Length: 437
Image 1 (cartoon, rainbow, N blue to C red):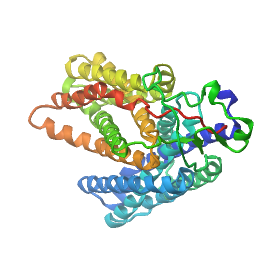
Image 2 (tube, helix red, strand yellow; image 1 turned 180 degrees about the horizontal axis):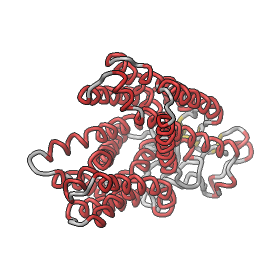
Image 3 (cartoon, rainbow, N blue to C red; image 1 turned 90 degrees about the horizontal axis):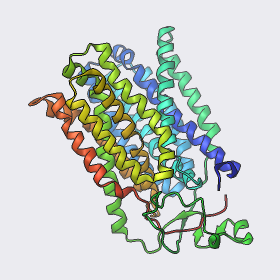
Image 4 (spheres, rainbow, N blue to C red; image 1 turned 45 degrees about the horizontal axis):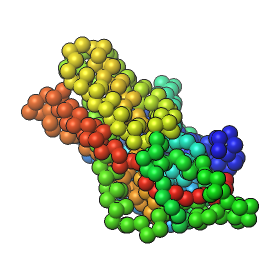
């Protein structure tokens, strides 16, 4: 089934999920770009700001864990709508805070909404991806990056124009509510778990993950079944293994969470330490050192747009394995090179290598085949997010007795381990037929 032949509701749902991912990135950037102005307004010190950001992160993890069971019970569409509205209104809080305590409360509310939206929109993305004949998860994450870039530019333009913070964030909140209202009706409704028949070869080139859109001729639903929204062996279109070992599924969730932790920790290290490492290791000036993060973030965004095509051709295992190898090669260049150009190339390799791995892990978590897909995803998200937050702190601690460059050996080990265990993202769901789009 070619993408151009998909039913209009599926294409509209895909566009709606794109918009939600972009909105999430936009709203997060609107907070980040206004941090200096907000800290000045509230009189918060740098040390206090660090504690408040940690509080926001903690509330985000709580939001993730709460969102999983809610999405499984009520559906990701309802939760995406509610979380998007929550986050849109919550962005007003930091701009209205006048002291440390109000800012702490505002960031806790904002973090909770961000975590809930993260899980629910990824759960909806997995549901939409099931209806496509090829992978599309990485492109959703690329739109998050694009939304962040747009939010940064819009916030910077507002600050340059002298807009009051509250006015800027109010405009962002209105935009968020409008986007949520337009997107919610176009998202896919909640579907019930399906019983499955047969087994699927998880060692196929696409890891067995992308065969849902192309059914075997003998599996095609009859006209009566298609009219009733049912097809053989399926109820509502979500494949759930009959008699699946819960212990095995739980172990797979933890394995996915572990490699999510490793990759997002490495990404967090690149975000926070790339510029400083280039400055300390090579003595680069501040403007040149900033190119390290620029190289990383640019190739990260480009790679996310390309990763779906690579996954569709070679499978999710190849994306995670060889992407991790590329990231490792980039880190080796960064650690060993005494010259600027190879070092920048190393950070660029890290960006392209890490770009597709996390979306494949999230997609695999949502397709394990249990009845609690969103809950499974929330556990993977939670541990991965913890890694993203912990990575910079771990590197800072390791760099004290050695150096920042030597400390980068730790994420190098993590990405090499991820490459070794990449097989865990292969889709081993039993083969099922799905409801007709």
